[in-house]
Amino acid sequence: MPHIATTNPATGQVLKTYEAMSTEQLDGAIERADLAYQQLRETTVDQRAQWMNAAADLLDAERDEIARIMTTEMGKTYVSAQAEVTKCAAAARFYADKAPAFLADEPADADAVKATRAFIRYQPIGVVLAVMPWNFPLWQVMRFAAPALMAGNTGLLKHASNVPQTALLLEDVFRRAGFPEGAFTTVLVGSEAVERILSDPRVRAATLTGSEPAGRSIAQIAGRELKKTVLELGGSDPFVVMPSADVDRAAEVATTARCQNNGQSCIAAKRFIVHTDVFDAFAEKFAANMAALRVGDPMDPDTDVGPLASERGRDEVHAQVQDAVDNGATVLCGGELPSGDGWFYPPTVVTDLTPQMRMWSEEIFGPVAGLFRVSSYEEAIEVANGTSFGLGSNAWTRDPAEQERFATDLDAGNVFINGMTTSYPELPFGGVKNSGYGRELSALGMREFCNTKTVWVGEGAASAGAGAHAE
Image (cartoon, rainbow, N blue to C red; front, side):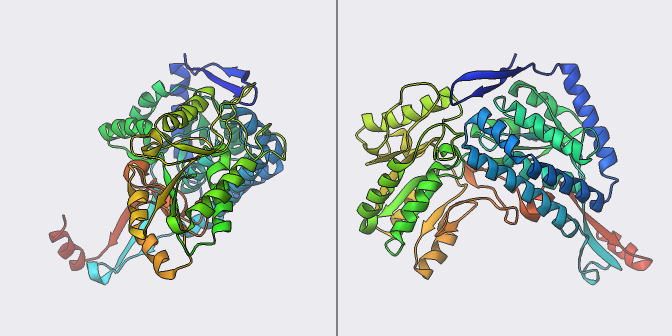
């Protein structure tokens, strides 16, 4: 049986456990989702917007309690959890407002295709399975759920097994907002049940945010079943600092970029690639900023960095740091495994890295930064792109020509210049290479799970003529 439980990372104490669904219960959840789809697809966009706005109102009204549950389950600071709930409410309102335009019929050149009318219509495809991680337990789900539900799809959420209360809470929010029963359902199952769900003919697509192995598994199942997938996988994001950069500002943002969400973010900057002309100044300021962060109780508003989500995760982070040290790396701050309760790890900066060290090529999921010295733009790009990942990226330069080059040359789904990588409902989000494929957010994220339908309308000879050349 899978272990589905709330375990407080700050204390290691198990607070609440859940029994996994039986096969019969899971089948019932899929059936309800399919029946809800038949109902939801017939509703108007305006009706769905009314329900989505109601969900946003509930999130705002219950923000503090929702944030407390998130912090208790995975250890993010209470302040950042509150901000996450607010961001989810904003995303819900964004899609409620923009869905009519995103789903509107898109005219085509009727004359060019010998029609009296031709257009593209966006329609829902059915039940979508969402396999989601624990690190942003509400936001990761909402950025799928809001566009999917507004398009007329229904969702089955298989959340990470350490955030069951957050998963059930969001299901309850959508139900209370007015969406039909089964429109958004949390299934309390382990990862071994994913294949059964995705193989069910009533489930038409899947989206996953998670590890590279998990993405490969989902893609393999979906490929066999000929079902659409969107995958947002890991990242080892570069943060490049060039000589013209505002070094003080870059070092300040670098600290937040590395330690946001206790360092447990796919788009957190992880590899800091600094030109030799400003390397020493940046390293000194960055290490001082990292060392000054307060580690402690995530419910305390003065805490900067809370515990990692699991003991296993913390042990893996420390093992990666220790491997670098054992092979000659230099630790500028942190790097010591703390004693006491909870799964805490200090903000850490490691330099003098070599390709033989795990930190050179692996994603590190904790508040640990790798610092790299380069001597030219070309070397900076080589190091930045020298990874199997391609999710986010950051470049700091006040040179307009360099800004244009970075925008083109960085091999990533997101390029942020003189700022920290983040996600916005207004902008598409996703990666390349082993960071996955497809896009979330913006109009593209909504249309990923739509049938992009071509509609051609003709009459008389025009219709017959076009048919003669049909594929």
